[in-house]
Length: 260
Image (tube, rainbow, N blue to C red; front, side, top):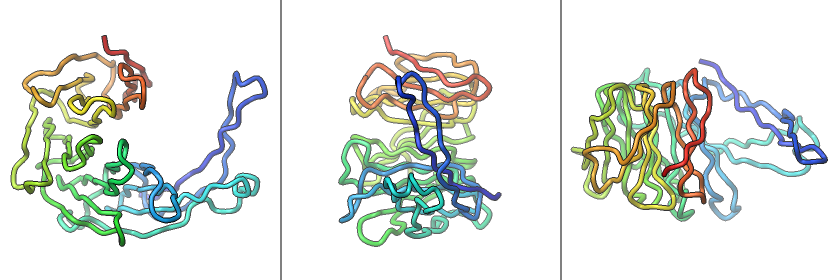
């Protein structure tokens, strides 16, 4: 359960046909790193914040200080710790923090982050003012592999867990019960991401090796499916090409899909 954050500089060749990665620095986080997410620029310094989900259950925030000087002098540390939020109030002592997700992919004004934990709990932290947990609850009975903010409706949160369920939560009405529960997946749900270009569309990935695209107005069945050849660990929408999304698949590499 030990891990580090590593930074690299992307260096293109003169003809731009190839690139290489130059290692800049490693930062000992103090625990294994299970997920990381950059925010849009926040605060008066207008800097991106890196949120880290750790194997000791803590959620840590770092200020990414990148400059030409830091790149030229690899020993100058590019990360400055902001704070350690610790575990969410509802997570158990030995729970692992499994995922983090900012709610600012469309609107940089929404400074909140959602986190999921291995004991089935979920937490939401506000970055407005002093970073702090604002909500936490038991969302599933098994490991919650992902907590994904709805990027066009920040009050909505989607979770996927090892119980084969994907759930939707409306933070405006509390979290006594989900507003949507999807039981289509035949194995654990590893990832969910809403489309930045359509407020109704989201994609999910599962250990069952199927990528699914949904319309949240009608969740009885997916809009389309694709066999990936491996459990879908991550899914990402292209930020501008609305018909493209990519998946990272267990023992099946990374793939790009076009919706037709």
